[in-house]
Image (cartoon, rainbow, N blue to C red; front, side):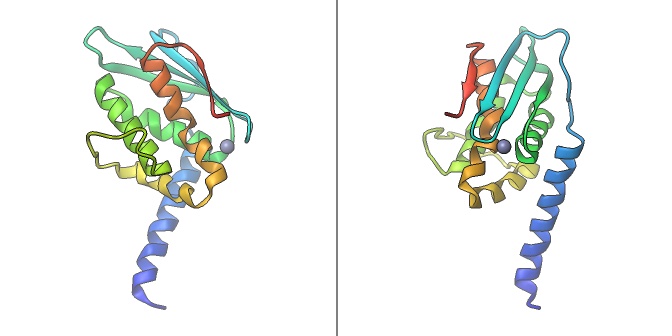
Length: 159
Ligand code: ZN
């Protein structure tokens, strides 16, 4: 076995484990009682449906974030990773993550991240790019985040 592909495989296994772990035991799961912003995301193509709850303080810090809903492993894992990532951040930085994750998953510069962030664990989502039909599963929670922060209170649909 050649060592180069070995390390790539190891990384893939690690990412796969991370996704499965978050899908099985989603973090920050359940309704948030005191919420200031929320949005719903639906992906009819796959049947993913989630609602994202945020508590945004006067200084624009996200002091709490939760989600509830149901969907495939990728949509749930992505939402779970989102909550871990943005909890405690400013809304501005959370939107930077939104732009970076959409860019990571779609390669589309529509999000045009002005700041390139170190995505850490979120890089685990990159493997989804190999499955174009699943990209919307992975971006769903992030579009809901964008909608919630902008307080449009709309349902985000991928279709
Ligand atoms: Zn899905």
